Length: 388
Image: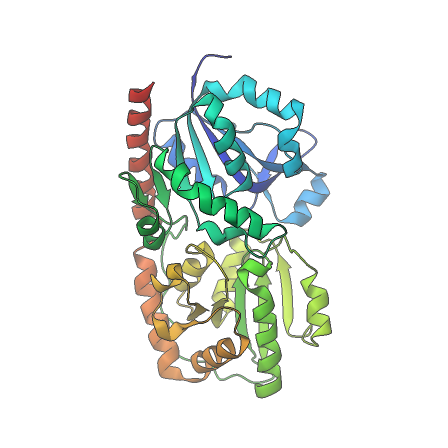
């Protein structure tokens, strides 16, 4: 075992990319600035334990991922599939390195985080949690019910044994008690835009632009959104466009759009960088987040900071940032259709929600949230050293 270093072992399920020269790339879902919280708290290195694949430069350019420039952010090893966690080579590498890190941070719920929790009975490492969602996070995925059941068992245990946790919502903080909790969303809003002052009249020449940002999967409710587009076309005509930014599809949604006869209304942009997302936020008319389970999605708060009215589902995280008149039941295309229609065709509703969203987003400015994160990890750093 090597000497302990002033480093953080950061555990996640996010898929990073490595090129053939060993450089590491990440996407907007886990931007390089995400790790500033650790450097600003006094840690020298961040060692990432997460999924990764190796691609050519051309493939990386097409993926929308960007290179991590900070040489103190290091990917420990390649985990191509979750099965790789049980390989002798991986276990040996982890064993030879894990004692070196001053602090372990587990993004939870995650498969790799769950794996580490169990093997940590052997290593007894101090750790903190970054809690992004509840135990239902994996519902809708393959073996999701089994994973959710397992998480239901270990959630209170993994939190109780931690030094504390930082989370994205008040709901999660109240659901999983601990004496050391900080609430700070992972959104990065440097400034808010002016609210939308008028409602555009839509026509075949100026179509209403709906926006969705995030993973293209069942948990995000993307199938519900496509079915809502069918209702919009059937009842109100083809005056609508759905712009989609995101990747990691669990099925071929472009093919689904074709089968639903709405492919001319749905535009898939793939994974975009910040400038690409900025352009979409600015030209869109309404943001839609029909998730089945969620903490508080970063993209929803970003959309609110641009003055976009938002329609989302009746999940606890959304209830913290949106009024009931902007929320609909999960997996309910008809309710989603009516709520979108109301926001797009009633001027008073549109302007009111735009103004309100700007006010709410102002409380999530990065200057405020970054300070909360840093203070949390400075406190953790002191407590971790005391336990050594």
